[in-house]
Length: 467
Image (cartoon, helix red, strand yellow):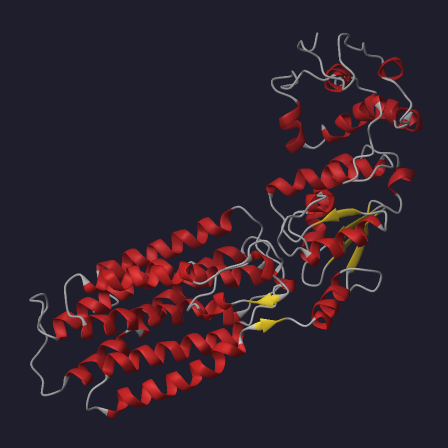
């Protein structure tokens, strides 16, 4: 009856929709997908809590809907039947997770699943159902199931969640039945006590189930005692500081000369990925190929695209990282600035493709990706010309044959030069001159054969559109 209830179906559809929405934008990283698949089962959990509460009302004779058969059993045993029935919506949650996972696996994911994170979703569904059943048994009122959902929602926001603890301390948010995902820090450095938390959540479920079944039947007292003992043991075991040696060891596997990176060479560029992310190397190489193909062979020999345990590598250039604990960004940034490399983070989404292409373009010109050393007039022209060879970048550079933001000298020059059939040869043959910081717009214009718009300020900005 729980599985067939319309609210259970609505909750399952809501969980599936939320999971797909949460995973839609970014390329799937399975260890983070595992967390998301647990977290997004909340709609089904809340629905189950209400359905379980209504089932208790029927069992207590407080509802005329689907009245129970008259059987010579006590309320504790009836509660036991309702709690056993929670296994069905929990199984439905797992089915939803597997359906979403099937879609994820069709999108070329990397890393591997963490099943203790995944199973937290179905177990939480049972926990929420037990909360709804227990509260309704001891506070029998038609509004109690809804109140139980409000209590569960309050639990999700009542525990402190401090970003300064990320990666250095496991905070009390893990005493919440379902710990929130840590969105900024990469999973490899999150040190999530997933196994302990699954045991803790399972024990909480047993404890609440025992409370719901309390009476003369000894099963309820047994569940209460076992659940309490495990909760008291596993709860504090999840918390506490992360030893610096543990963090140092994790970073040494991802950052530095001895990092456990897998590297492949494509078009003269070395692509190095962190463990588990090797599947992205082909995508990186494919993404930069249009730009790389028009650069001189000698300038891309030995270039390195190196992955770091940072979601957004623009943080490398942030002077003040705020009050949060960003130790992993600082370590990665120190390594990045110590070597000639193009940085890639552990998130691979549409908005990171342009960053990678720009980074490789700058590196081919002898400039740094983050330091923004390409300030020469002619260098700006070459950079825009390179970026325009990528269709995604070109969308921002051209609009119906005209540059959309036609207020810069270099974009106007590239627009005029773009149709030259010998453009690639001209740029390659004059590469060293055109990428020289001392080369001016006028000198670059004479080389590539285009007029230089007049009326720009010292930054190259034009107050009028391209002529």
